[in-house]
Image (cartoon, rainbow, N blue to C red; front, top):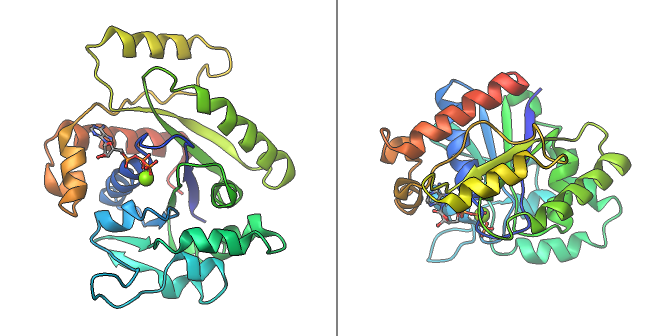
Length: 261
Ligand SMILES: Nc1ncnc2c1ncn2[C@@H]1O[C@H](COP(=O)(O)OP(=O)(O)OP(=O)(O)O)[C@@H](O)[C@H]1O
Ligand SMILES: [Mg+2]
């Protein structure tokens, strides 16, 4: 059975997509079977692979995660290979799908229902959430065993954290008793700044988060930004970069922590 991870933060631009892409790639390089789910109507994860499922730019429209959620096709039919990994792509229509889902009985369970059908075919399923705590994000927390919160060590970074923890507690209590925080992952870290050190010290001494941060930090690295723009993972684009080193270390930490799935 696959280990399913929701990569979640309601704040925008905190490294969710970068983490899904490069954690997935690192796990795949370890020989793990990885499925990435693009759960965001911004489609950044699909775009990072050059997959445009929306049918814009004269390309044919493809089946996407929205079709799967609405029961228009089996999940297997919408999954595409991306190198050694698999991707369930998204389109900008996912926003409308979310509205349609809101009238669906048991709307929080639709992703889980579909992921359960294929979870013997993968070791890891990584869900790249949108920057919100809406029906889609709840679906990801119901489908997952663990959630990872990528976060920048900056001012106000924690403000959203209470909300994520509160939402996840409700999901755990009402819908998914297995759900656990895998950890908080610091990204875009500039070790030099006193401020980021202060934020990390502050969080590591906070009783609520003691022991909940990953040992691995993802340093700031331009290669992580550039690689996605060139439709590559950081391991293809810059295998010797800090970004490649950090995501490899993070994948190792995750496998040590949870087993290989
Ligand atoms: N470690 C890093 N070093 C430098 N740039 C990074 C790093 N991680 C992410 N970025 C860049 O920061 C921006 C935001 O990252 P990303 O798209 O992964 O965040 P996100 O949480 O998925 O955003 P959204 O909430 O909009 O979905 C991107 O331009 C990305 O390339
Ligand atoms: Mg994103």
